Image 1 (cartoon, rainbow, N blue to C red):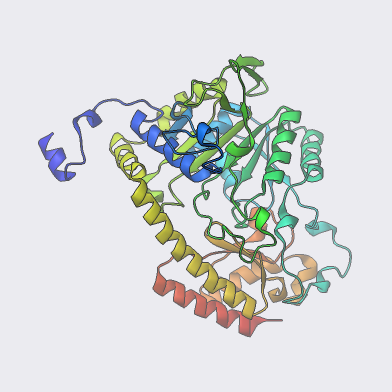
Image 2: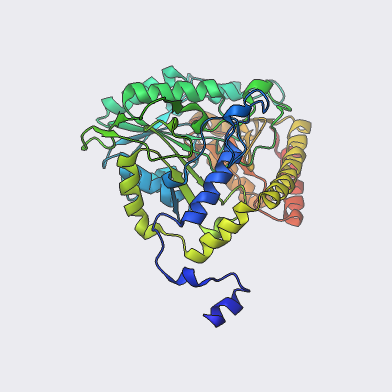
Length: 451
């Protein structure tokens, strides 16, 4: 024990050598819950709501995250896959708005064998259905700014995806939202989230909100946004929580093979506030804290019929006691978390501003980002004209960027963007020197390759 303590500079404690709760140590879950509450939940007027203030977190919003409803696992991928196992049967559908994070298809399909049901936006013409000559009529750079609202799911697009799944023999079971969105770098406004949640409840489905970029919102005041009202991140916990004055019970169904059961939310710090049993949230430290190597993620659900099997599945996805101790200490140090977040977001915003300035100068259309570590760009004017009618220009352009300019952007078609020419530029994956090099190469490409 002495050797372990010495080699870990006093960070290794005797209790770490014993078995822990497979779903996370109490201290780590408490620190996680406190951090999520302080970062993801709205703060109301202090004086007006002083009587509602929660002493442990300092909030005036009734709902707070309950540590007993958190499962800490080996990364967001692990807890998300386990949640899919708990909510659906083999071959059932997960609806995801397009474009979406490219590896969702593998993460959800490889073992859980879920079927992805794309929710296609109205402004996206399907590749095989263009009218003759449509591809040649691409907009010129600077003609029209990409709009966030064009990418919001609507009731019509949700119903279309749902109906397409049913027609194909796939039962839609889950709606998965990435918020803040990867690859778009935007946050869904409250009214869109509310519409999605109401849709899920009506269809007796479940909603999973992947909020792994929830602490990486760098455009909080709506700069360069369409309006201030839709520029801030809203957690599903703010939309799907409810208040009751009596003992709360709710009927929920997990998978299609399981019967409906009455479940009671576990005891919480504020017993009159609950998260709806059809709403679930996943998060990890990989993005907001740049700690992907620690492999620490968390799933939050107050549905006990989901929580029990989720904890059991986490047996194979546990986080070591020493890692959880590090995370607990880090998240409990609120002053450090605040300093780190401000410093990190300042650097992220600095790179975003630099990239946005270049794109504007060269007339490249892009979504004005407000969160995340990437920019969604429209490079359709750079597709080879003779390849556009066949829809093959994006792959050729992607190869050209790699082979001739040493740049690798994520092609939109790999994320189910069914019109070629859109790319995701991740601007935080390299150090400052390499970023300078990449920006120089990208500028050379934009100036020499424009059609």
